[in-house]
Length: 148
Image 1 (cartoon, one colour):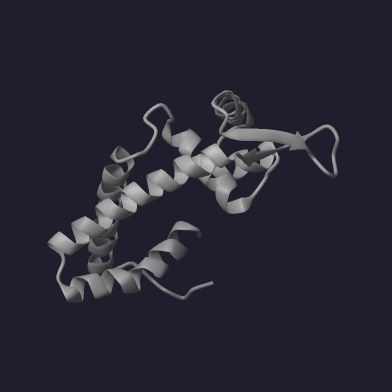
Image 2 (cartoon, helix red, strand yellow):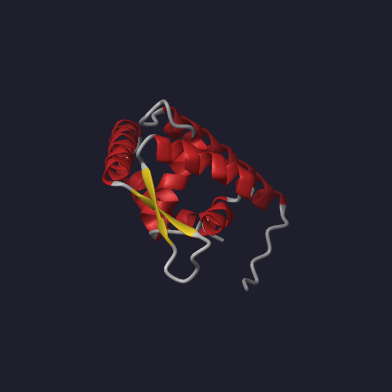
């Protein structure tokens, strides 16, 4: 546990600026999305499965912070699109595991490539070396903050 205290006016200002910057950048990145027929919830679930490997639906719902009935709808849609496959759970015959297909990997890679290219172009056009160095140094910290 950290002993960091963020209670001064400068801290409040920095937190607000960070929140606004992350939200605006995230919104712009979302609009670059790949497959326009998939919603953010579906793309997020695919990304989680690609990173974590096959998961039971309940575990995927927990990781995605959605209720099980919502995840059931997401899984059904993704399965109909051929982006996931269900396989028997190795330890519990009552359950299935959800895994991405090769097609889903291609959709995710295309989306990542498009967004990375846009972000690199934006940074190259609008940042100087010092600002880019600061962002490179901040990237692992932002990643950590996103996963706390």
